[in-house]
Amino acid sequence: MNSPPLLLAVETSCDETAAALIEGTARLRAAAVETQAPIHAAFGGVVPEVASRNHLHRIRQVVRRVLDEADCRLDGVDAFAATGGPGLASALLVGMSLAKSLALGLRRPFLAVNHIEGHLLSPFFGRADIPPSLGLVVSGGHTLLVGIDGAGRYRLLGRTLDDAAGEAFDKVAKLLGLGYPGGPEIDRLAREGDPDRFDLPRGMAGSGDLDFSFSGIKTAVRYLLPRLRPADAADVCASFQEAVVDVLVRKTLRALRESGRRTLAVSGGVSLNSRLRRRLAEAAVHEGFDALFAAPALCTDNAAMIAFAAAHHLAAGRVDDPGRDIQPQLGPELFSVA
Ligand code: KG4
Ligand code: ZN
Image 1 (cartoon, rainbow, N blue to C red):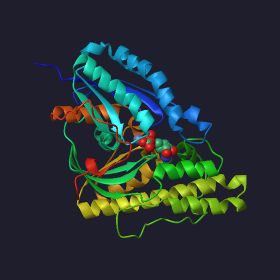
Image 2 (cartoon, rainbow, N blue to C red; image 1 turned 60 degrees about the horizontal axis):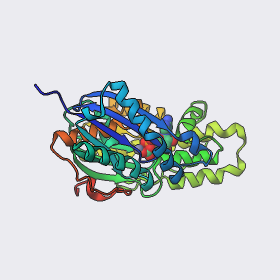
Image 3 (cartoon, rainbow, N blue to C red; image 1 turned 90 degrees about the vertical axis):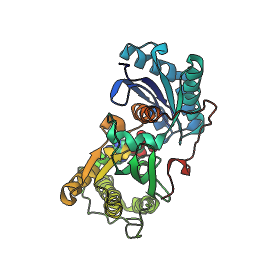
Image 4 (tube, rainbow, N blue to C red; image 1 turned 180 degrees about the horizontal axis):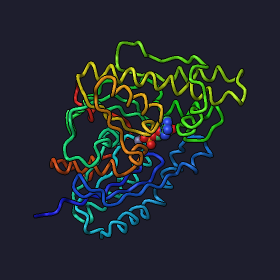
């Protein structure tokens, strides 16, 4: 019997330089992520050109590490994949160019993977079947509710109309003088704070649809600043986090009700948030649905999730033209019309 194909994926859409080798859809042979966060922290956010230069500098070593760890030669790889977008254009080009060149040079299939699809499928990592479910993707760049009908079959149900949830965490952390990325810092400080101390707006909570808005809450925190003392930071973090989590939970429950789905798949960097995980896990018990969370290493940007999505494409016989361009914006092509 033939062994399942070995697929090497690279991810360079933002500030993580990552590679992963997967065998079939089930077995992760090796993965590596090198974060540039400390470099960008000095700027308070990701600087695109700094990111792409660092990808270029590091990607070869990251790929080498993965192949060595898996004890695999480059010519033993059966297919190459990269994140094709959405993301920073100059950063995407690094991973795409590398994967395309390897695929062309070694005459192997090439696959471009949508970064959001990588996140979306990450709670199912290792599974050959993707069950009908509701996906909540909460990351630094996106906040989406997606109906999942199977691998490659998605319907967009709701999205943020302004800031992404992670972006709100990062911007509020910056206002409070905390480090970048802000999410983990706020999560940590919030544990010592009072979530009821400040009444912050729950943007679009009652809008009757499944869209989100997080820019109002950031502005509300900005207006609070002049009357805050350093000792108030934990209470602001707890109140802010509770407001964001409240809206995410409410809309997710609404989407589950409206779509009739009984499985929730939560992914993206913000899905590491301890309060969000707790509230959704409690709601799952209360309302009788299954809540699946991506494993912590798969929440923030990584190549294992890209390899997993690509392995599903490959298994379904879907490969891409190596002439294919990057797609920096999230266009409609990932989703069929609802
Ligand atoms: O998925 P990701 O690596 O990036 C994008 O694809 O955008 O997510 C990064 C985001 C950042 O905004 C970061 O602040 C947030 O995830 N994040 C968190 C936590 N850990 C990371 N947000 C809230 N609570 C956390 N514990
Ligand atoms: Zn991401």
